[in-house]
Length: 202
Length: 379
Image (cartoon, rainbow over all chains, first blue to last red):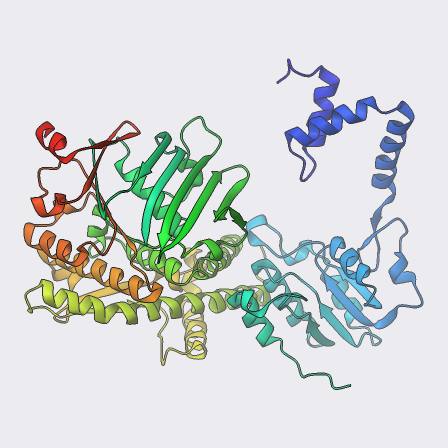
């Protein structure tokens, strides 16, 4: 391959290819596009990359991505201090925030327990979570973690640890809105049945 | 159901091969290592999304190629059905039903049903428990398409729990974490145990009837699912409770051996003839009769559950059966089941086998149709 691209271009393609979801073809297309851009644009991109890396860290309270020591959500006085939503990753915070339905605070674990990948509870932000949850103002902790094997185990584990201090709930899993009952598989139906609820009479 | 054609591309030793099936019986003849079993393997793969010869998709792809394709046209109760799979080790599998890509394996499994009887099945009685568990799992995947998902989930929980056991010595012990993994193993393991147990209950009477006939009304065959977890009354609550007890009892040994010792991954199937363990006491002949009875039971069960006749794949096995057993098998098959048969020689086949059979000759990954007479004289 070294003979196909001149060396700096090969380096750029190689770097791009390391990004998630980018294969060799996409990497080549992006690289060829980038080198045709005006130098100022490239400067701006490079600077944005560097600054994001240098300035974005984790919120010291909830471990969500943040440029400040305490993130906007944790610092907001409008947020409900009684509710804490536990998620695996910052991506999940963003997904829940987009719904604009949740007004409590978050706690980001930073991953899921997985002995195969060597991820033990010590690698996750579980201790700070217990400290936060044991404070008097927290009334409920909602566990919003994917129902994979690793996710279920993490939910069980964290739930057990929090139980002495606070009410622990988990989000429901089941049928997607607009989904047809007869298209749902047995697992989804079983989950939906287990998480059934009374009709809310207006 | 009837398989009308099979198109293989870069599958095993086939570069590009279209096979059209024209008769209820197809005899595939050829020397060893020419590609006879590969043809049947492609059909098995469409039925179960796995092969009993390998669990790596990479092995199914012709050397030097990036991907392999299998395309099949079928007729199911008069309705045409097209199945296609593309195996790409780097990018995953693509499954298509009637030209539409399906995302979940459960939507693909069960479209084509096949019962395979190969010389490896003769190991069912005497071989390792793995062979018997895989046998049950292959049937379940076809009968209950969700089973493949249940099995994968269990295997993942098992791998994670084993990894935790391996790390137990080097790191501090976290009891709460251990219990969380135990719970995953128990919930998912119970699902497997109940489904396998239910399958055995449905197979047992069919296999018993067949073995009674095949043994000249002398031997009563009983099948049992031998679980490490006492099944109790068979409800999930009973199995979950017994599973937890068994885990507590074996805890010290599991920690010592650093591997999971309780669960469906260690279970077995027991065969008894007149209340004596077939594994220990059955002669070669009795074992063959038993395996034939199991396969005929499997055929009947798949047919009754699916409501259509499954394909029968006989891989290099007829030579292992004597004339009497061959005769019974032939009688059962009649023209009801589409049957693909592989063999190295046509000689052992009596005229009833060859009657109206389509004969294909395989040479180094190429298949050619031969008229029966030509094959006969070349023998």
